[in-house]
Structures are given as C-alpha cells and as structure tokens.
Length: 510
Ligand SMILES: NC(=O)c1ccc[n+]([C@@H]2O[C@H](COP(=O)([O-])OP(=O)(O)OC[C@H]3O[C@@H](n4cnc5c(N)ncnc54)[C@H](O)[C@@H]3O)[C@@H](O)[C@H]2O)c1
Image 1 (cartoon, rainbow, N blue to C red):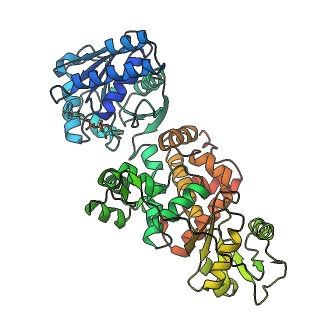
Image 2 (cartoon, protein in one colour):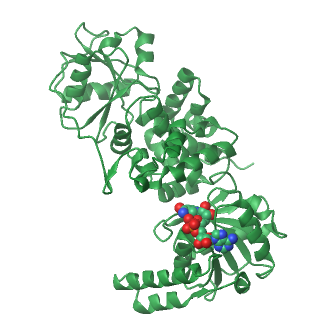
Image 3 (cartoon, rainbow, N blue to C red):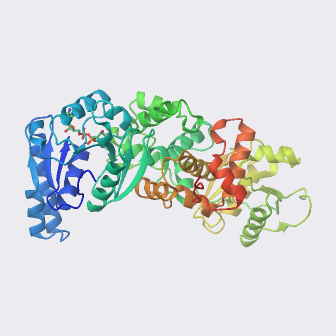
C-alpha cells in the first residue's frame, strides 16, 4: 500500500484552491487529515483557508459539527507559499486549471519535491490520466481522483487508473475516498470516465429532438421530468451549468471517441454558445431569466373536444391493451373491431418507430391517427404525437381525451422513439456501452450516475425496470428507420435482452 489511508496524521496536499480544491480540502480536513494548501496565485491558498474556517464555523452553528471538531478541522489546514512546502505530503490532489501542459509541468515538479512513494492524483474532468502521467519518471504512482462540484455535497468520486497506474495506488485512493465520507467508483482512463461519459445521452438527444422540431424547449423538459422521470429537464440543466461549460464537454468527448455518432453534439448548442446565450449566468439561455426567475409558457388547458370513438392498433399487445384501458377509463367509446370505424380516432403506441411509419406500413388513415407513448404509462404527464397529416379536429379530440383526468398532455410532432422513449433508450444504451467497454463494473456505473448526475436510478437498473427487450426494440427500430448509427444497440444491451437477463449481469470470467 503506497500510504496508509487511515493514518490519523495523514498528510494530503491540495494544489489549486479554487472551487474544487477548497471542497476537497474541506472533506480531507473534516476526516482528520492534515491538509497542505498551495495555489499559484499569491493569497489564494490563504483565502481558501479563511473561507473554509468560515464554512466550519457555519457547520458548527448549524449543529452539523461540534465546535471542537470545527476548530480542529480549521487547524489542520496549512497554507504553503511555495511548492517546496508540500515535501511532507503522502498524497497530492491536483485541482488546478484544466490544461494538459500546465498539469504535466506541475506533476514533473512535484515528483522532485514529495517522497518517492507519494501518490499524485489529478482531479481533471476531461484530460487523460495516462497523458498527465507521462510527464513523470514514475507514472505508476499517478492516478485520477475526480470529485464533483460542490464536493462536500456530491458524495461520489471516480478513481481512475491510467495505463501505467499501479493498481495498489487506485486501491488506496478508493479507501481514502471512503475515509472522506464519499463513495468511490473505479474507472479506466477513457474520455469522460464514467459520469461525464454516461451523461452524453441526455443533453445531446434532447438537443437533437429540438433540432428536428419535435417539440419546444419547455415541452421536452416537461416530458423528460414528468413522464420519463428525470429530476431536471435537459434544457434547465444546460442553463444551470452554462453552455460555456457543457458545450465544450459535448464536443470534447465526441472528438476523443473519434466522432462516435452516439455522442454527436448539436450545432444548435455551438451557435447558442457563440451568441452568448449561455444560460442563467447571462440571463438568457434556452429560457429567459428575469431577476433569476425562469420565464415559462403558461400551461394550456385540455381542449373540451372528445373523439367519437377510439380504435387502438395492436402494434404491441400489452401497450395497446393499456392504451385501450386508459381511453376507456377517460370515458371514450373503445372499438374492439379488427379495423377502425370511419369516425374513430386511431391511436398507435409506437416502440421506436414514428407514427407516420406505422400508419403507412399498416395502411391506416394518417389524418385521424395519433401516437401515444406507453413506455412509462403511470407517469405524471402523457405525450400525444401528431403525424404531418393529423387533422386539427382529431388532434384536439386526442388532447381532450388524454387530458380529461387533469394529467397534463404534451403534444409533439412525429419522431422516431417519440421523446421519452428515445431519450431513455439512449441513456440506457450509453450506460450499457460503458459496461461493454469494461470502463467500470455495472454496480459502479449505476452508483456513479445516480450520485454524479442525480438520475433517479443508474442506467442499467433503469434499463432493467423499463425492460431490456423493449429498449432493444426501440433502438433497433430507430436505427432501421433513420439509418443513423447513433441508435445502434450496444452489444451489452442486445445480448442481455436476448438472453432475458438483467443489464447488470457481468461478463463471464475467461
Ligand atoms: N468546477 C467543476 O465543476 C469541476 C468538477 C470536477 C472537476 N473539475 C476539475 O478540477 C480542476 C479545477 O477546477 P476548478 O473549477 O476548481 O477551477 P478554479 O479555476 O476554480 O481553480 C483553479 C485554481 O488553480 C490555481 N492554479 C492554476 N494553475 C496553477 C498552477 N500551475 N499551480 C497551482 N495552482 C494553479 C488557480 O489560481 C485557481 O485558484 C480542473 O481540472 C477541472 O477540470 C472541475
């Protein structure tokens, strides 16, 4: 073991005392470590210490720390005015500017200062640990230790093994993260590691839906929150993070994976970033903000119109039956005939296909056909999909019927995979491919995504809940109709769906 992660007097150096360095120093000091703080900006480390002292006092005032523990944590913070002061450190956590050359220079300098067996860890989000380590004579002692912002509240850290990292270094960092009160997950050195890689499915697919004109920003956010079950809509999230941060991440991960179509970013986001529509920080992003308040369109009341009768196509028997029961429970006369009557509203429940495709294939009258997304049937919102020929009367009748019980209805234009299906299938598919590439174990992928992205479940557990076979069908149909390899199913998902086993099933030992 390179150092004893439980040693009461463990000395941790934090280089770079900005947003991340401060947070890391806080949890290290609270766990009893002595923390050596260094920053290239004069006074920055001293200011960080002052701010942390204030944080500890506030925590004590709120009863989250005893006064003694707060004073002891503050006492463990030591400001160093030159890099040489870090000589006693057993582990260094670097949280400086995200620039490969600058980080490499620092790591090279640190090697001559700290003990020969000290561990050098980088908090980089987007740079390769292997690339940073090549600057060192002993690359085996370099690893990634990636926390999330704000560090004390985001209770997960990725421990990243570079190509030359000694496994024991990562093992020790895993134990150190636990000592800090966080949950460690282990990842291979690949673009985005786990969390920033897994996050590609959400924003990029929402931007693609927006770019295709399927629905507006607010409607997509509402569907993904209230029907799919995400805590925050993708556009609200991008506005919060700022496109100056999230757009380069989308671009960088796509490029680092050699233009993998699954991660292809949207030209819409690049243009908005260029135009300065960054989000909350500039007062306008995908939404406008007046005094910090997000401007929203008022909800539209469900129309009073109702269909003469409803005929539900038997595309998938279980979804069709659920749609029939729903329509009947909302007061519709449901036809149980082989073909629809002349006056019936035709309801289809596509699985990855678009409404136009299924109408044409089966010869149904597109003018009176709408789609209904049944992937998450018991949701707080319903999505009704119009095809280019849907007549306004049938549109209003469908919106009136499916909103008759007060559940809000989103009307969207035709789209492969509709909205919720498409985004959920992409999120699960990318999670599966992270497992297929052996970047992390299924358990770590799920844990990292839940804690790092705030999804209600990890992508593999979520995929299991939605049904791997159904998700596979959604992805296969989207791939067949669009010809876009973006939607091709990961072999991990395909095999487990065919075998009828959980998406968390690991690969066999050889
Ligand atoms: N902010 C986030 O959300 C976030 C999340 C995870 C990881 N990260 C990563 O953490 C690192 C730091 O990010 P941050 O947001 O804390 O940045 P920041 O700009 O808030 O702080 C960086 C600090 O490093 C100092 N610094 C720059 N070059 C230095 C050098 N050569 N030697 C010593 N100090 C130097 C700066 O003076 C500054 O105080 C980056 O690698 C970033 O990618 C950031």
